[in-house]
Image 1 (tube, rainbow, N blue to C red):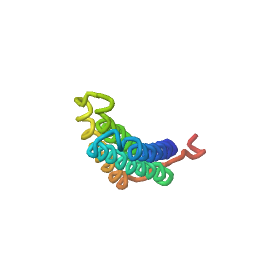
Image 2: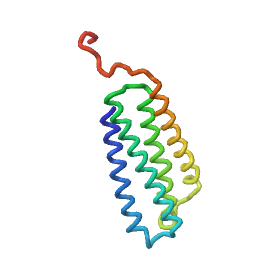
Image 3: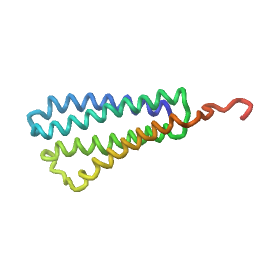
Image 4: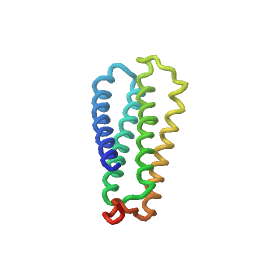
Length: 138
């Protein structure tokens, strides 16, 4: 599980840097300043939560609590829903997408970010579980 979150966090950070470069160079002339700002907010929150995924992965090497992986999955859902919807809203004029589904996705994604941080906090109050079974238990 810990390698999964380290890989997801690394990929999300890589994608955030690539999307940020695309936004500042490729979209600058194609969208309005407001749309570019919306895109940049998506990149910013994706990067913040990529770091959160990395923190979850690293902490799972030292702590094994039931809520910590749930925090990681919540961060990932938030990235897809919050940042993803902002990316699509920013390029909506280019792609001609229906915004009726995109609008509600943003606050749902934000709720997943809040839930993830709440679960992360709550996991600090949980006792560690055994990470590995001893040879005697096998």
